[in-house]
Amino acid sequence: MRTAERLQHIYDRMFERFGPQHWWPAETPFEVMVGAVLTQNTSWRNVERAITNLREVGLLSFEAMAALPTGLLAEYIRPAGYYNVKARRLGNLLSSIKEQHNGDLAGYLGQPLSALREQLLAVKGIGPETADSILLYAASHPVFVVDAYTHRILCRHDLIDEECGYHELQDLFMDHLPADTRLYNEYHALLVRVGSRFCKKKGPDCEQCPLQGV
DNA sequence: CACCAGGCAAGTA
DNA sequence: TACTTGCATGGT
Image 1 (cartoon, rainbow, N blue to C red):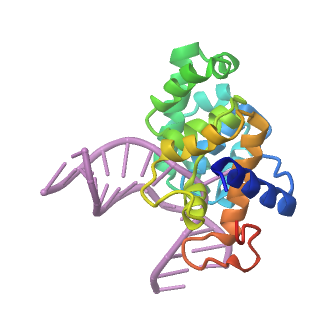
Image 2 (cartoon, rainbow, N blue to C red):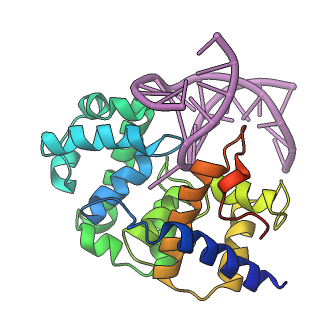
């Protein structure tokens, strides 16, 4: 079967089983950006605790968070793990928005895709997945987000090999699927849902995985 | 107890 | 350039 058909088939099987995932789980684009940094190598459950802390003290806005010392921010996001690193990374992102667009978040996110991606990747602490998550889920650009589950699932179904890099894997999707923000949104969310349940590092319990035999 | 989670940058040779 | 290590909480 051709690659395009297989990728579409995988999507269909996941969607039949689980339906729309309603990603990104956030109220505002700013909250998406914060969550994207906090969830780096971290379970979403722990990120939720950190987000809740921030919401309770009214820090889920660019202006409020930008006015906060890094050390104090670190305390609020503690449950998300790597809290010192992540507080610095969030600070770097906020600084970039200040410098590039004078604190105009809508203007920052409203840039053309390539310019925004370049600026995000220039921030220390924002790599390809975090940048693409923000591009897709905060700025609604048709960019496919690749993560560890994407890599693992496609490996186990022999669509790629182990040493396949981020962009190579991203291009596999983007070269064979229409450039559709809604599709990419749902596809990535479903891969995370299925991966976290049926494609873990160790005990792959492929028994009830919707991708049996794709 | 060991292992994992919606990564990334810095250090080492 | 190609590997390795640090970062850290909370669930299974």
